Length: 257
Image (cartoon, rainbow, N blue to C red; front, side, top):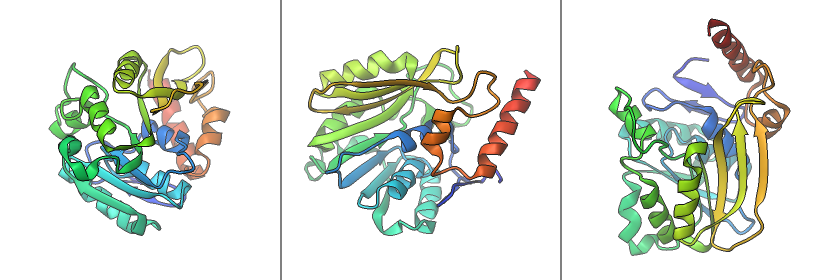
């Protein structure tokens, strides 16, 4: 499998042009997220190569899925990936800045669900590649702007599912609360046991409910194999050969270190 494509069981991600390639964060969110039964229209914000949209299309055959992406090079990959999939009639990609939708009355309450693997970092060192830097940092989609936008485009019964670094948890949750959203489900993720929590999967809605908490690891104690939880979560997506190759790559990296 080349860097230019990533094959899953039911679809392939071509990533010739996108700055950000398929990664564990996107796969985690796409496998973990569960829409409410009433969900019909979903928006994937900052879709990149279209990974999240395709994962949700595979899992939930009744969803109509829109995706928006600012980077024109990533959009080129997404159009190819959507067109080559079995769900092309339910997938739509739009190029542009989603924050421009904040004042669009036609977008008000349009979506039942928003899903996003958003830019993580508010500041710090930028990547030399400007498109990669844009995909990783919050210049074009600050957290405050994300929640203001989501409040506008989401239906009253809608939900928001995101992934962010553990260091950003307080900021994301506080801004969600200020905008009228409540945490309903959260999973804290470690790379392996005894390591610190690095990622948080979170689902928000507009109605306060009991919160479901879970915590688990991606890999085993030695880091050589995926954990049972991760395998169970992603088993409908990964090819066996792809998962095995990732374990080999991980072992080689650990030996070099």
